[in-house]
Length: 244
Ligand SMILES: C[S@@+](CC[C@H](N)C(=O)[O-])C[C@H]1O[C@@H](n2cnc3c(N)ncnc32)[C@H](O)[C@@H]1O
Image (cartoon, rainbow, N blue to C red):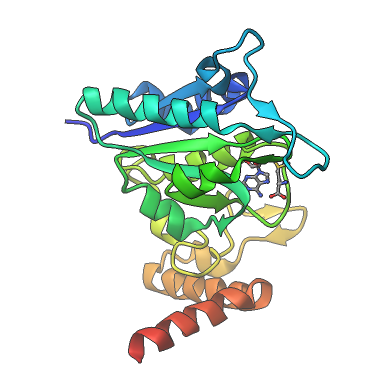
């Protein structure tokens, strides 16, 4: 039996997801039933003629704030449909620049969930009661501000789906990917052996697998030290905490 994951996404702009989710590796994972992705339009959970989802901020100020009612109704309705079908209750995650920083480690944790519901914000903000009483987690994809949560949701879904069993081929080296073991990946080359006078490192042509593995390990470490020393510091902090 296929062990698939269900991802629901709540958004004001459902059409934005068509390209990224229908193409390439994610598209194939959807086709093969390894992941079920459902996009829900927040406006479908409004009751007025204009499908109003936002209003002015109390206390004044610029921009519009997403109202609580459609968000609560949408999440409750998606959850109750899931429960009626006897499926796992989704973890509800708000995409926001105020959330914890998304990383490979969190992607791996999320890839173990059975169901996930992502909420994409838009405009100036979201009524704080949504944060306080509706969601389980808040995730940011980086220390910058996007116009909406849609691109952030796509990033999160992409990073999770490629980790699901069966999505990448059996020959893929997920364990060697950058950020999987706290290091950046080693340099890689393909044919031709020489291009514009630039040669492939001879060790990679030696056929000596033990030496190649050793070279790759060294390269991975020196590249991380050079480009992202913060990753090594973080790793030794974690080790020190574990040992104490
Ligand atoms: C213009 S932003 C609102 C930013 C808000 N005024 C603040 O300062 O926290 C609109 C929406 O884009 C999404 N968003 C923006 N930046 C993001 C980020 N770095 N990570 C995840 N979502 C983000 C969130 O869903 C947010 O509600």
